[in-house]
Figure 1: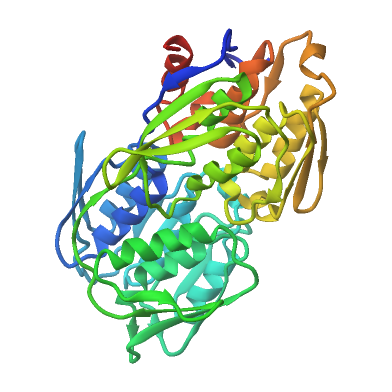
Figure 2: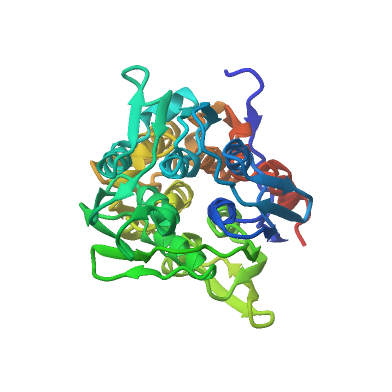
Length: 439
């Protein structure tokens, strides 16, 4: 067994707890980028401090922004316009937002920007973004057959609509949108024309909403076309919502143990993909209610019901699938999760990882090109007689997948639970407290 694996705690009774979720990684990194591009200083309240956001902070500092990260508020002064030829070096780690947003930021620079990353990042798709950047005059050069290290050098100049294939990741589109107001062009508007399908559209809506709050005119002009008016990006005082996708494992804990969980500060209106937990878990038989606590936030209350299988298309909210798959292992009827081919290009090939780990447990699972069929009605939990080591694949959502499985199944170990530091460093503490402090 892997040295020092984490023994996932098993629930001895139905979960009944209040859990406060840290800030959204997706919102934090978008607000950081917009703050660095703004015409005046910004503050961010409730920012998530995790590996992905720290990598973004360091990237923006390398590009010249000043970022002060306090306990409650972060202060950001914009990137100055500094010409020169001295290369800048930036580490992207395994953070999708950093490895996609930073090349777009670098497209505005005359200085070469060298990007390095974790070895596993070479498996993540980037080609669609690089093709679009090259089409507007940006140099992207690789040092080997691998994606990273690479060097990006601008400046970009836009002479017509930018064609973008964002079918592998919506982050390509968000990257171009974030820098579009400041790209050099003779045109009043930067236009983007999409090729292929667009997964995870809620993340694009999140980007557009964040831009509009800073005075940017950015919107869809058709089903596959967008435009952004060139001009200034305003500084602002931003407040980060809790990460609703990271709330998923805690909602799952109540669902699979027949319990009750309450999550405060759930936004009444949001663009986050994690808000889809409400209809998903209702479909699966849970009683889910969002109780307003004022005009901005409420408390999300979930009470478990007769847990039924899930059948539906998750193409727009694919990041929820590892948690959903863990719940499906315990449902009373089979599940069919479709539209998830793009998950093969996340931190790991999530379809293969989920199928592999479920099969290891004895759950009946079928992995298709873009779907998972999961049937946990065969009594697999009762057939586990030896310790089982689940692999995280350096993927934070696969680590929390293992934690959910361990609530009901005995002797479940996770080989690298520390990978949760990517988006939720305090996960193990929150998870343990949830089980210890059952009301």
